[in-house]
Amino acid sequence: MENKVFCQSCSMPLDKPEMMGTEKDGSKSKEYCTYCYQNGAFINPTMTLNEMKTLVKEQMEKRKIDAGIINMAVSSLPNLKRWRAKTVSL
Ligand SMILES: [Zn+2]
Image 1 (spheres, rainbow, N blue to C red):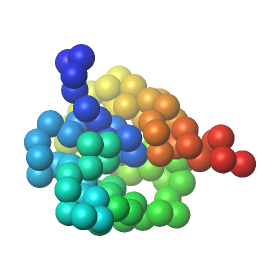
Image 2 (spheres, helix red, strand yellow; image 1 turned 30 degrees about the horizontal axis):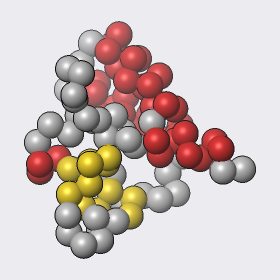
Image 3 (cartoon, rainbow, N blue to C red; image 1 turned 30 degrees about the vertical axis):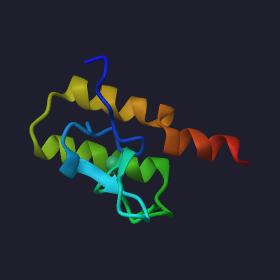
Image 4 (cartoon, rainbow, N blue to C red; image 1 turned 45 degrees about the horizontal axis):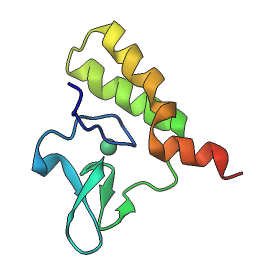
């Protein structure tokens, strides 16, 4: 568990290479998943934290994940790199 890497945008675990996003040079991103980040840029760069919270909740509900776990994932989103950066760059 300790070494598990999560997407710094949507908190999805990056435990398989195909889950990782790609940088401009084609290398794998160590911070973002393929659904958030490709070719060195966010797929949806104007997305807000609230939109991401809704999306993560919907995706997890579809997979019938326990409500407690969903709440934990959603409440951890503001601590991820993508959203932390937003709040400091005023
Ligand atoms: Zn992601």
